[in-house]
Image (cartoon, rainbow, N blue to C red):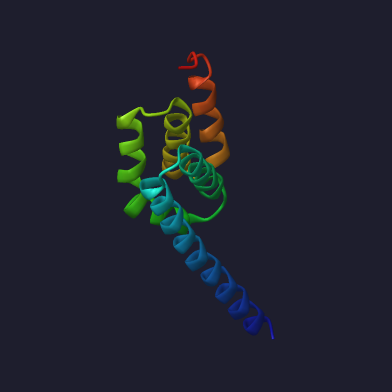
Length: 116
């Protein structure tokens, strides 16, 4: 019975990981293709929150499809809030599983920046 419970638990974790991967891909697509800045900001916020969570597969998916998009947002400097969100996504994805600590550190570093 214990082996069956472990099997079901592993299956549920695998399903969650696949869901996180698809969600990362959808959010990255929204960031790169959305016309309105508000839509792009919202997608970056959702992406940051997802990456700050415990899902390692979400970070892996972000590394393969989201990294170039986040770096492009930083390079474009179109909107300061979007740049901050992109940097927070990068910090959460590249952190050592402590996504919220990395995001908080980036927020602290960027807080003295004046609004544009």
